[in-house]
Image (cartoon, rainbow, N blue to C red):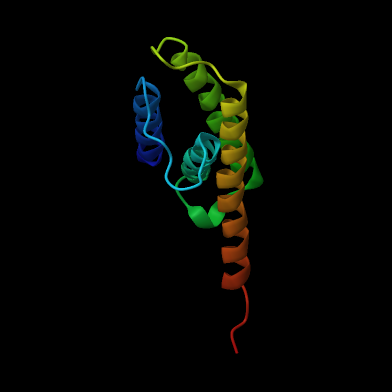
Amino acid sequence: MSRWLPVIAYMAMLFGFSSLSTLPSPPGDFSFYDVHIAAYAGLGALAARAFAAGRLRHVTWRAVCGAIALSSFYGVTDEYHQLFVPGRSFDRLDMLADAIGSVVGASGVGAWSIIRRRFETRDVL
């Protein structure tokens, strides 16, 4: 259960931000879509770790797919939640950015796992 606590806490943080009627502008030249991608990349990465039983070296593509599905679905529910927040709306492009971020984060953790395993099994001269 403890491996899921960071995922739940992160989801709660995202829920808290989406409950705000107005959000501060993203820094620099970033757009709100960039923020969505970054935020859901974090959720995708945490979910991939949780699906891999908390072991980053043993992330399988099954865990990656589960993380992408969970994170993307949470993005859909979060957009639905915003229908009930004054000043916020349901935005399909936000959902797409959430899904892209989920793929980036979960796939990044999966790729890192493959790289780590390959370097660990290499013979060092």
